[in-house]
Image (cartoon, rainbow, N blue to C red):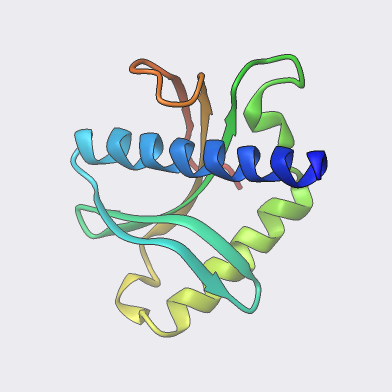
Length: 125
């Protein structure tokens, strides 16, 4: 029972972190095209668009740094899955095939805090 509650808390924190990352991108002129987009290659947390460039974003969230920085949990294997998922998405959106990238956004903060720390890693692959 306790493990289920802990998993649910992680899901809630993760969703909050994705909300924060989306707001962060919007404040920088991006439009959010999709959230939690599922492909056979894996899920893409956010797909954003600015000036004709499509950005596939992996969001990692931590309440604190006891387990390390959020971005440290993005492994080479995860990045490979992100690339595969992005390529799958681009098959049905060829208009973006020449201008896209994969980014990582790390969010650190307590659930519903007003000022989470956000680190943005562009071109993470």
